[in-house]
Image (cartoon, rainbow, N blue to C red; front, top):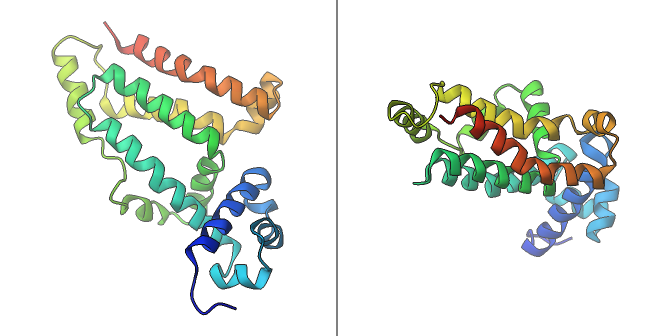
Length: 203
C-alpha cells in the first residue's frame, strides 16, 4: 500500500462515493461498493477514509465548498433584491439537482450532532446575510417592496428551495413522478419559486 495519499486516487474515491451516496443514500451505501466503483480494494479505501461517516463528510464538505461561495456571492452582490431571489433560486436548484444528497445530510447531521452547525459556520464562505438584510430594509424604506422582515424573506427563499429536495420521495409520490420527472419539476420550479416570492413582496 502506498505510504502517502495520492490526489488522483482520492478524487476517484470522492467521485465514486458521491455516485453511490446519490443512489443509495447514507444508510444504503456500502464501502465495498464504493471501493469497487473507484477501482481500488477496500483496504485502500479504508487507508484514505477509516469509516463511511468520514467519507460522507468529505463528500459533503467538497460540495459545500462549491455551493457556499456561490450563494454568499449572490447575497453580497450589487444586484437588486429581485435579481438576488432569481439567482439564489436558480443556482441552488441547479446545484441540488446534481447533489441531491446534501440537504438530507445536513438535516441528518444536525439531528445527530447539533454542534455540526458550528462546523458549517466556521467555513469562510458560509453565507452572510447582513448586506441582504440592509438592502431589504432600504427597499422597504424606498417604497420598492412591501414591508417584510428580512429574516422571514430569507427563510422563505431558503425553505421553498430546500424542502423539495429534503422531501423528494414524498413529493414524487404526490405528483406521481420518477427521478427523471422530479428533475423536470425542479427545473420548472426555478421560475415558479422566484416568481412566487417576487410577486409576494413587490409593490
